[in-house]
Image (cartoon, rainbow, N blue to C red):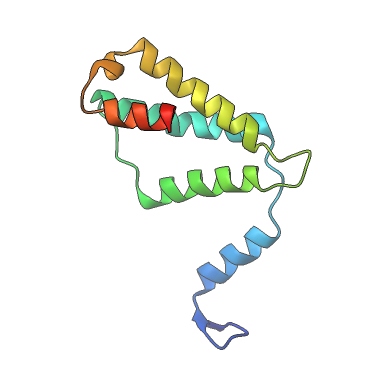
Length: 116
C-alpha cells in the first residue's frame, strides 16, 4: 500500500490509474469513435437479443473514461460536440431502421431523449 499525501491508503493500481490520467495522451476522433462504435454495437446486439456478453465493469469504465477524456481534452482536441453528433446520429439511424421505435418498452426513453 502507498500513502496518499492526505494520509489515506490507496492501492498501487489506483495510484497508477491516477498517474496515467494525469499524463494521458491525446485521443484522436477516429480512434475514439471506433472504440465507441464497438460499445454501441455491443449495446445494439444486447437490445436485439443477439448472443453477446453483458458489459462488465471494466468495459463500462473504459468506454466512460475514453469518452470523458475526449470531451475534456484541450482545444482543438476537445471532441465533445463531434462525439455527441455521431452518437445521436448512430442511435437515430438505429431507431429508424428497427422496430425499436414501435416497442412500448423503449418509447419513454426515446421521447425523453428527443423532447427533453
